Length: 215
Image (cartoon, rainbow, N blue to C red; front, top):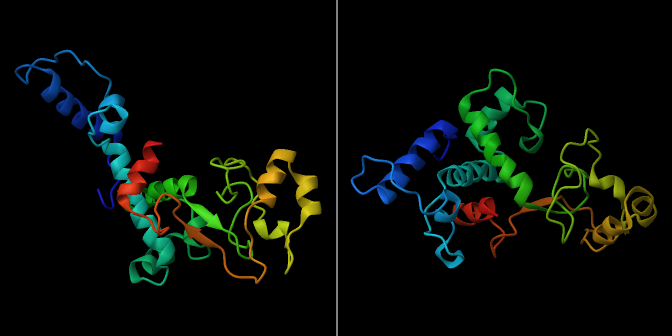
């Protein structure tokens, strides 16, 4: 579960066995499923039984590996993956090439959770995509995950002065403009920084990753 994405068919078989154990009287017949599986995997505080959703738990583990790859780019295992799969890119923008191993595909699956739920703190804006990364304060959705425009946030920044208001006003709707202009930006040209907003110390954990995946 740490490094391999479980096939959906395997997860369904596990779900089926757990459901049969709970709802069937002898363990052999199907029985009556009194609650949907989604309700069973809800937390007890939300009216569920607190069972783990295997697919989302698996994703939370894989996102941990993706987080480690982002934060420890000099690690030997990350360098090995880089030499094979993204020699001319960084991990955040690396793609799944034809013939890639299932381990690599699995880690990229975990990275998708980070792309959706993690947040970028804006420095010089050179690492962050305007449309496909999560960086705007107060906004939970990406501007356009399917955009072919890979412009970086640095294009919206005036060196040493923060946001370039004129460019932003001409490029975005009034609502988005307001959100961007209220987003903190560095004026000392520091690096962009990926953080995990679901945990107080801003570092990723499997527990909070699972919670975020369920949202």
